[in-house]
Length: 420
Image (tube, rainbow, N blue to C red; front, side, top):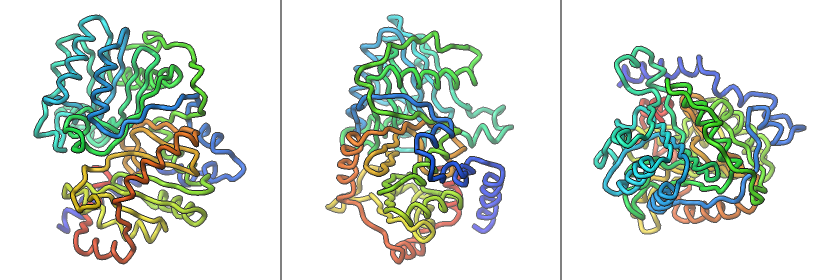
């Protein structure tokens, strides 16, 4: 165990020393009181746009049905990315709809992360790799595929594409946290992971996500594409809410700006909250001014749960936040894993997308997030969070210390920095 701890400590220390991904948490721009949140987000590379209210999906079965219908009705093109993508019996209608769409002339470009075939969630027991989609003419690229050649460069193993987006015909756009696999979409209502996808009828967001997609595709494929290949419709009159699309390089600055600008409250759902000292300092500064609440899932797979329990006391002590965990329902029954990525600030701003609030999402994975300025949207999302909080359990510092003693594991916690 000591040898394992030493090896992991060296790896994590090297990553932290060489990775500038969290430097934005010390940026004077993020904490400058004279700047508006919009000015801060633009400084960190956010793309401003306007969006309508989205349709929100918090159940994978419902999103699977909706997504299948959208694909079946597509007329021109579909752009898709996923972190974990695979087929199972429940997902066969979706992939059949994709193949049929391609065969009738719809252009489909699909990016999936290279570890999709190495999925270690429950999906591994129901998994069929997606290479068969190529037979119908669907264009597939794998991000950093796990090959002997790529093993020469460790960065291609550590850095992953974690984004989940969809663009259809230049007018429909979706963003969120659900993977295209069994545990996210196919396990059945009440059994899929608790997660979220947001569906917009928004040419503006469709254009922004299209541009992101083209950029990442051209960075890895010999088959080059351009934005002009995928036309979008004109602006919609329903696109009235200011929004800011943030890609990988700006994720840390986005989070730092939101914490530093909060005036009333912060609610955040961080998956595997492995934070470095810069991130903790920013959260601590925010919690000294406003109530900050973290609603944490506990992934009961060994390394994840043991790592979280090891870190809980330090997280509470060093940030001053109230920490709740969501594991069991009111009757003591195990709930599906809470995989949602969400931040709510001042009952006004919502952050949605793929980015977790942890060290890995700051620079060791490709991420996408959307900040939306809409009290109307946030009111509905607050109701959603309240429903989760009904069965969540607050963890005091004393309780956190006991959990660390009973279940914590330092090696598991170190691994969450690169495996989260």
